[in-house]
Image (tube, rainbow, N blue to C red):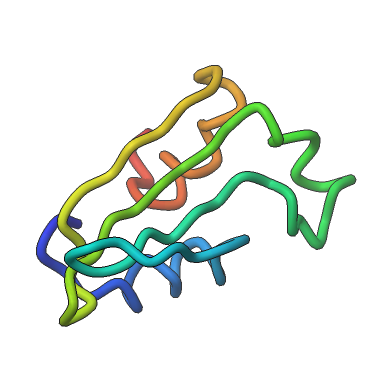
Amino acid sequence: MKGQPVKTLVAKLGEPDSKEKADDGRVYIRDGSNNASPVFWGNFSDCKLKVYVDKSDAITGFFHSGTDGACARYAHALDNNF
């Protein structure tokens, strides 16, 4: 997804839980704190996904922290082969 518009990511994962300004763009953060369906998704607060975008809203990189199980929903949403 690197180089693609961040709206492509938002279409797959939904709106981020928060956004932060960065020197060269923004950081979109998914950490489970704004999970609208806790029964369906389970507790995903153990996974944090940060997506870095440039000033033109193109994805420049990713960072995740947490267990593989907790982060699996993000991986699957981005790649159905996962």
